[in-house]
Amino acid sequence: MSDKIALSTWPTPLEPLPRLAAALGLGEDDLWIKRDDLIGLGGGGNKVRKLEWIVGAALADGADTLVTTGAAQSNHARLTAAAGARLGLDVVLVFPGTPDSATDGSGNLVLDSLFGARIFWAGDGVPSALAGVADDVCRRLCRDGARPYPIPFGGSSPLGARGYVDGGEELLAQLPDMDHVVVALGSGGTMAGLIGAVGERRVLGVHCGAVADPAATVADLAGALTGRSIGADSLRIRTDQVGAGYAVLHEPVLEAMQLAATTEGIVLDPVYTGRAMAGLIAAVRDGDIRSGRRTVFLHTGGLPGLFGHTAAVRRTVGALHSYSAG
Ligand SMILES: *Cc1c(COP(=O)(O)O)cnc(C)c1O
Image (cartoon, rainbow, N blue to C red):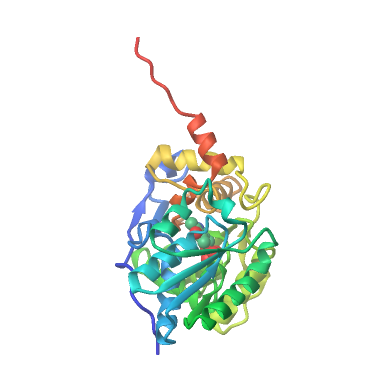
């Protein structure tokens, strides 16, 4: 039946956010955080739940090498590297750019290397061509006698999305009267899986600019996952936090990061979880999320990405608070 393998210890904690709730004008019981950033493999994050299914299928297939794609600061690539290390599989990561792109390497790239993954630099073409390059890499690996297993961008196949059917069911067991779960929408598998567990009405996705058509992407994945037709227009998706694009620091996101950090000691990243929190704050302001309702913020990880984001690092260090005595 299922070839799912365990890559962490479950469930992840669910914690209240009373000081952040108060800062937003919500009741102190209204706001919760699901700590998938604390998943115990490779620095944690949402991709581990997907990889439990995907790598399970790879092992069942007799694969010995995992191949995936992403941006150089991909959290998914880092966690694929960690899963490979944990299971004794080789890992090849296909990134856009050239080896020079790594000279100021930091954040996730440091961890990719530490986990022993090899990187294939695909050159400066369009990111959408990466899947084709990954196919070429798989053919070459086969010629060299390896048994590669390709994993799509973000681990967002219907199989990978099953990891968030699991995550959504885990959350419902922890907070049965949950009204909203707010999540960053990247490659779409996390939101699709949550919909599979809790239905489309309770999931609010915040688009991060990683895909061209977020509603169609999530609707297709959720439809394939659940076997029922899910209309793109039935999904709750905010597109107001993309700003100038996926990799570009968006001002409300920096403010959301500062608010979560100073009220709760929670670290968000500038690409995904900071956008999700900025979207949650905007939803409170425009009345989509009201007090008296139970709202869960899904923390999907991404901390290493903060250190790989030059603009976010500069702005944060630039705001260092100094204290001078006397
Ligand atoms: C990949 C990622 C997301 C988005 O998840 P998708 O399933 O790709 O939509 C959110 N947060 C972090 C930190 C991620 O790495």
